[in-house]
Image 1 (spheres, rainbow, N blue to C red):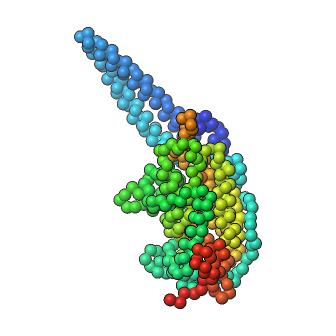
Image 2: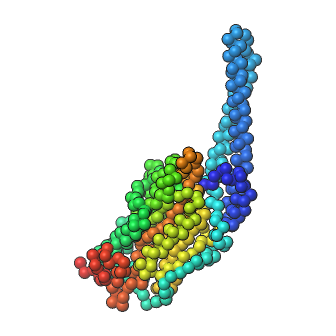
Image 3: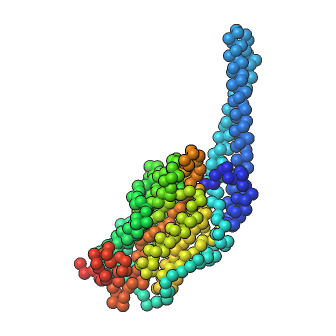
Length: 427
């Protein structure tokens, strides 16, 4: 969420920035937030003043009683003040709860370089790499995987419902090869590998994500204050909540690996016979905590890490700067990396890279500490390194042969015990 100090000091600038999002509800909530903040501070001052008056009267009453003098009038006045204080505190708490609800709804302040637009059609291509050509003769990746005995969607649907899959044989090994390849690359760049818990509580989640995700994305564990994680970004960011990190240790660079669980409510249809939009998938994530002045450059470096992976896998791609009408509330700037689907003749989203500035840090109370002891909110960034099923989809498309076999990308052969081609399972 936004730092309320920044809201108070830069109200007009922040409101103007929010207008770029073309979200009337956000503007209405922001105006209500400013109004509610004024009311809350007024009640807070009233409460403090009443406490001071009551404390003063209490001391006077104490002195009168010590002198064995009548204090009835002062006691009556003290009671009136106490009643007024109680009434004020009730109002103050009610306003505070409204304030908290509103400030969680306000989106992040957008970076000036975010392009203005209404929807994903207005996202701006930054650069692209690789040769792109359409090939309508290619077999759908899910159909090919099933025919080769490498994936089973029907049995997964039987026991779990649509949006789940079994990976088998060499395709399951290829999934693990992708994971190891991406982790090795990040570890070589100084990232610390972290294997996170797969469930976190609501308080931790409220610090790192859009509250709408509780309904549209996350799975709730019945009867417990726990949610299955939608990405390792969430527990890896929340792990430092209510902490202050020595600035000399920044940036902290983590890479997380986890299954991701998503309802995908409100999205386009679940991929019932494929690997693109599913309820459960493995993903390798990049997470960075850094000083505010370093986050812009750090975002570009995270994007380059993902680009490097795609180039080594020989997957044509483009980098897209997400526009004001398509970006989520948590990010201040976001890039998507889209891989080329030769069968469909279009780009599909493979990775997202976001600079959240201090938005998550304020929510989660994560600060830096300078050598002189002064503190401030640090910046957080997250970036997909490898959403495994989506990359597998591209590999199954562009690496299939006319013999219905799949060539293993050269970069992954060492992680496949030298296997260069995947054929139909016969067992």
